[in-house]
Every structure is written in C-alpha cells, then in structure tokens.
Length: 124
Image 1: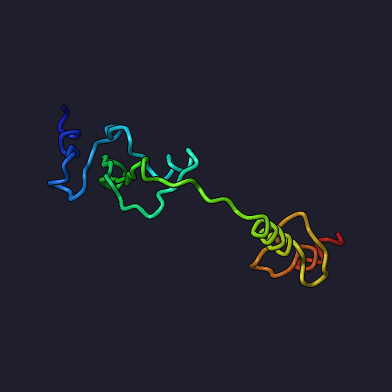
Image 2 (image 1 turned 180 degrees about the vertical axis):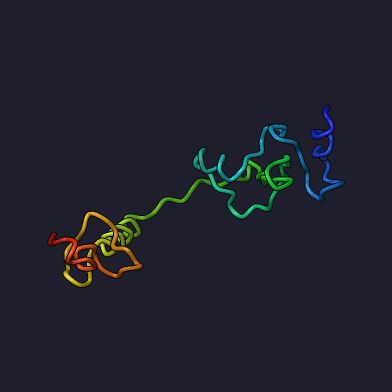
C-alpha cells in the first residue's frame, strides 16, 4: 500500500471520526450523492456513512458516502408542480415593457427585452 493510500485508509473511523477510504477504495454498498442520483435514489435523511479522501488541487479533497441500502427513491414532481414551473419559465420570457414573449429569457440586468433596452440598435 502506498503512503498516500495508507494516509487515507481508516475503515474503522479512529483517525477521522468516520470510516475513511482512498480514491476508488470504498467497499461496495456505499455511493456519493451523484452516484445515488444516477441510480434514481436520494440519501433520504440518513447521516454520512463514510468518506473518500484524496489529494487534489488546493489540498485534501473529500467526497461523502451514503449507504445504498438505506437510500430512498427520488421524488418526482407532480403535474401541478410541472405546470407551475412551466408558467414561471414562460413569465421569464415575457417583456414587461412591450408584452412580447421572446425566445430568450429577459435579462434581469436590463429588466426588459433587448429590443426595448436598445431601440436605436434594433432600427439600424
């Protein structure tokens, strides 16, 4: 075992407080949030079960691991929530000055569409 791997090998949690493994050294049954999301799962309120440490840019990096057997299925949005999201996104495309629905989101810095914000450039 290399020195770097040995520095991050703490399966009983004596040194770091929680079980710690090196990069790609975690046993099966553990997953990161991103891995859970890819599998259609979420942590579901469970505490962090372990961590992976590795040497990265700016120092030691960490990724927290959760138990896959305690993970819950991802929640999906209801039809009413999806409709509300659609309306909110459509409202972001409607110009408050001219009332035109644009194919882009109205810039918050301008507060109106580009045609209303820069009328001289549009006429040229």
